[in-house]
Structures are given as structure tokens and as C-alpha cells.
Length: 101
Image 1 (tube, rainbow, N blue to C red):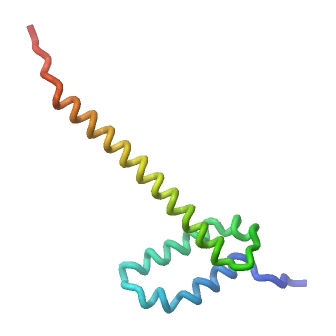
Image 2: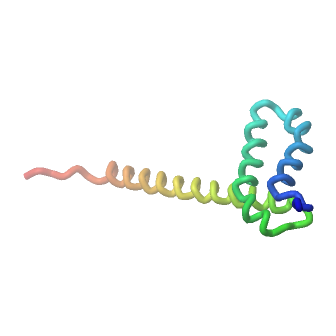
Image 3: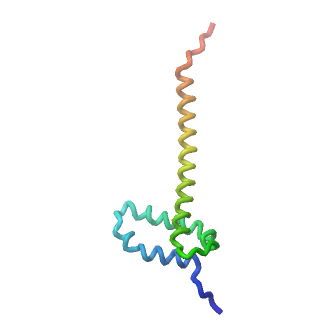
């Protein structure tokens, strides 16, 4: 006996196929970004499949949101590190030079 319900990955693939014309209409620079969004959704397909939601687009969108939130967190960490490095550099430059006796 075979499965009667498609897997979440099958449903996600079908969604991506339905959006294929939209992707083709995008500017060339935006097409890889579009592809990346579906990659994010595929990265969380195991969790999304367990949800077994009636509308497979909703778990895909939440998966995309999760990945973008993680990217924002990474960028914020990097920004804080850079700001700390600049502040340290500024402090060292503004300190008076040591006078040798």
C-alpha cells in the first residue's frame, strides 16, 4: 500500500513550481534570492512535515522567517564586534603617548 498523502517536501516542491512564473518575471538579481527563500524552507522541511498543516505555505513562511531571524542575529553580533573593535581602536588612539623618563 502506498501513501495517500504527499510528503511535505512534495508539497513544497509543488508550491515552488506554482511560483515558477513569478520567479521568471523577477529581475535576474532577485532570482537567486527567491531560490534562497525556498532553500530556507527546505532546510526546515522535517519540522514542517511533522506539523502536517493544511496549508503547507504557512510552515514554509515560518521557516523562512526563522532563517532570516538567524541571519539578523548573526549580523547584529558582527556589528557589535566591529563597534567594540572600533571603540577600542579609538581609545588607543586618543590615549596620550607614554612619556619615557
